[in-house]
Image (tube, rainbow, N blue to C red):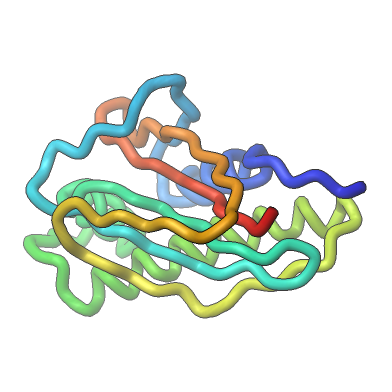
Length: 151
């Protein structure tokens, strides 16, 4: 029986962030947003596993990440270019994680990503398992990554 775990997503997150000179470590602490709004990117999983991958962080953190991805360009608001960068970040993390799962014998694919912005965004699914981890980004910023999949 094939078992899903969150480790490929954690490994992939560290690898992808490193490409933009951003440190990313898994921390054993709770996610706490320090802003009025969060950014939530979602991407679907299909194939041997059906579900969603969610990455959540405060808007300010999202803008810092997008700035690094765009070569340090100053970012002052969550415009279309910043949103595109964050969607691409999600694609990169999930694509790399799927490579690891493929090496483990899974047949998986991802759907196009979606981005949501708002206060107190809550996501739930009927009869799903959820694996979550907290990421510390550049030693001060916090993000949450969750994998929700059908039982």
